[in-house]
Amino acid sequence: MLSAIDSYTIHRKAGDRKVRVGELSRRSGVAVPTIKYYLREGLLPPGTSTAANQADYSEEHLRRLRLVRALIDVGGVSVAGARAVIDALGDDSKGPLDLLGDAQAAVLPQRRPDRGTPGWRQARERVDGLIAERGWLIAPGSPTIDLVADALAACATLNLTEVVDNLDRYADTAASLAATEVRAVLDRPDPAGRMELVVAATVLGEALFGALRMLAHQHESAQQLGAAQLPSTASRPTSDSRVVGARVEGAGHGR
Image (cartoon, rainbow, N blue to C red; front, side, top):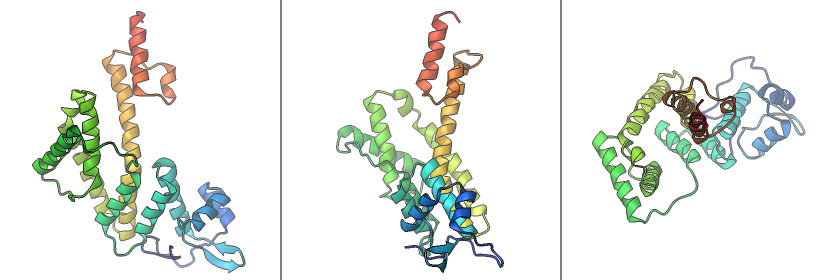
């Protein structure tokens, strides 16, 4: 259970204004019942008790509440995953690398393919080789190694050589982005801010990059197929294949 103040929360300044749960709800956009649920689940530290069934909350609670909502609503993290990350933020014994592991664990898919096949073992060996060739400092037991092998093995099963053969390009992009994110973390002056950014860059950065990649797919599909502009339906949530399919179908009708 979280204490009212932990290593993650920002130290209150003199005169920090306290608010009731109703105003906390108004300022955060989170319904009061949801806030109370987060309090019960330990996602928010308790407020300062003022009377029976009444408490005041500070800017710390507002900041924490916004982080929780971002993890769940944007990052797609489960309540249990968000609790694990929040607990890690309040653990003074954990450093940035430990926190990074907790944040990554929160976004790992729960389903696992068969990892006993010759194809999967071959994919895992390739991932191990890539790590060794690049000199990446990776914990031997990191579950993300297996995740890369999962994707490679699935691509090989589907004979997606175009993806498999570009593994180094994927790795180059990931390394460049990771260098930028880690430098941003180290450039933050306060330890609490650095720890928060580790979580945000891991969970929200994953969602951000995935969405940007989809946008880039739409652009490249239109550009490489010679489309002057996308159909109006492309503004709605759709898959890249449907965008490409729309262009190919249009080309077939002489448009």
